[in-house]
Image (cartoon, rainbow, N blue to C red):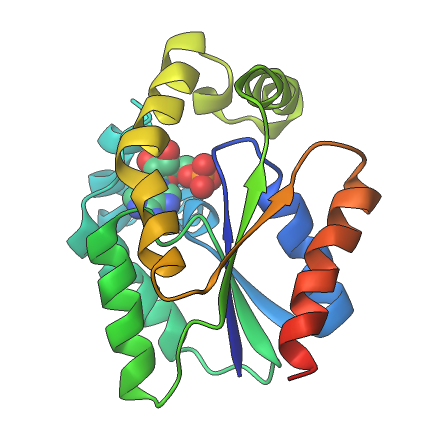
Length: 193
Ligand code: AMP
């Protein structure tokens, strides 16, 4: 199994690209944001706990997030690998992921970071907000906070995997097809090994 972290600020296109990778490579796509929204919709206890953080564009505490991810990883799948979208977002989450994978003799194979300018991110999130039904995509203050949180708490995850020579950066500007081809060439270089 191959494990790939699709990394980047909110609005950088991780979800869109992860869906395409799912189709092309038969990878499972795990989005912690989608999992949280699923819990919110179903009014689970976990959803109630996560709501107050999500409503403000803050990160849900690591123990809640890691617990949810562990449960998801325990659900069997016959995919060729897993694309992590929106996880890990902190160093403790990265360490937890590494430990969980190690328990199964697996490891993160690569982190692929989508580089997108801040102006473009805000524009994309607002566009998405018109149809996503996500309140955190509509409020400018929440959007800005999500970007600040990314810069302060999540960006270090890039360096964490870069220190292990696993981080790749690709240009996240351009058409969805162009970006997908850039990501695919990194994925192909991993699967060819
Ligand atoms: P996303 O759909 O990835 O933008 O996530 C939406 C919201 O869910 C984020 O603003 C956080 O409140 C929460 N969330 C998603 N993934 C994580 C994570 N790995 N760690 C903490 N909070 C998360």
